[in-house]
Structure formats: structure tokens, C-alpha cells
Image (tube, rainbow, N blue to C red; front, side):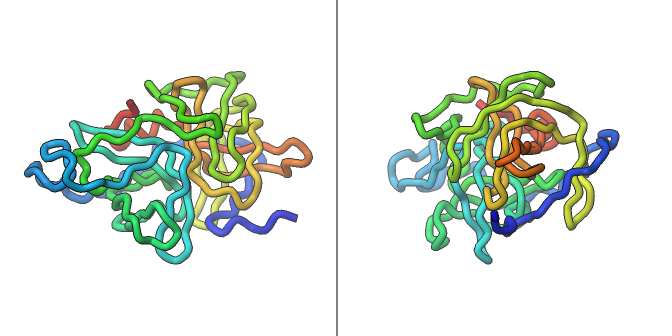
Length: 238
């Protein structure tokens, strides 16, 4: 039997609830100074800066483990998206379990999805997701459509593909009910970390939120459509 997921244990709502407006975005931390800093694009090559692709594991204090969803940017400043227990304003996110390589700090949260500003935020990061076969470039975001083929890339289970089966779904969490989700036949096992990116070819579609059912009997998973998140934060994939 799969052990309970350490971050959240969602329970699908029996009947879909109407989509509600996204929860307000928390006040973001101030943008960094535009002055050059070591390792930025204004002063390149002096210091190696941490970087990661979508689909990689990320970590935070207290044994928290999530997945980096997509790298995003706004006006030449670079961020990434994630969700789950990593969605806490002010939380520092790391590339390693020992918390020695800092990636960035959560600056805003909406609908359990976090916007994390990279350290040395003026340095360009890869606009791609990592798969077992190599990097998959992401060129734009799209709204998921029922019947569309979709794939999730996870640092635990690799690539899993299926079909979008519903929009405007809701799930109950300990913290409350989250609406506006999409459901897919790409099963996700309990214990997989939240935030894994869903793509359709080179297009970003969403971030994994929770699971529904047992993978041995088909199962499903739920994701937050990324186009809603991008609008809320005013950022873009690239």
C-alpha cells in the first residue's frame, strides 16, 4: 500500500463545483535592485549561480520536497513556479535535500501555487522541462482542453501521459477546497511530490496538485492550469 503523501492528502469532490475566482495573490516581496551583482547578466561569469529545469526536485526546511514546475520571467527577472508545502511566502527553496544550494525565495502565492524568485534573478534560466530522454523546450502556455493528450514529467516516475477528462473541478484539502482544476487520466501515485509540470508537446498546461483513485485501477490526477497562474502573477513561460 502506498504511504500517505507527506505534503497534502487531497480527496476529490464527488461532484464538480463551479469554478471560483482565484484567491488573491499574496503581496510579493520587493523586486531586487537593478544594480549589477556577481553572477548576473550585467556582470557575467564571475560566480556560478544555481539553476534548474521544470520537473526537478526542490527542497525546503522541515523535510519538505516539491517539484519545480516551470521557469518563468517578467521584465528580465527570472522566477519559477511550484506548489504544495513549498507555497509559503518568504520560504527559501533549495536544489538539494541538505539545503546547501539555495535556488530562491517564495515571493507570492495564489491558489496554493508559489512564485519563487531566483537568487541572482537577472540571470537567464532554461525555459525547459527535464525528461528521462533529455530537455523538452517550452515555448508558450496553453489552456487545457477536454480530450487533449497531456504528459507529466516527474523526478520520481518520469514521463506519464494520458488525456484531459474534465475542467472546473474541485478538490478538498485540509486547508479548504480548491476550485478551477483540471482532471486527467495521467495517474499520480501517493508520495509523488506536488508541482510536477504537465505539458502537451512544447506547451505548458499545468502543475500537479493532487491524485484521485488508485493507479492499479486506472486512477487520475488533478492539476492547476498554468495559464490562470501566469495571469495572476503577471509572468510568462519562455
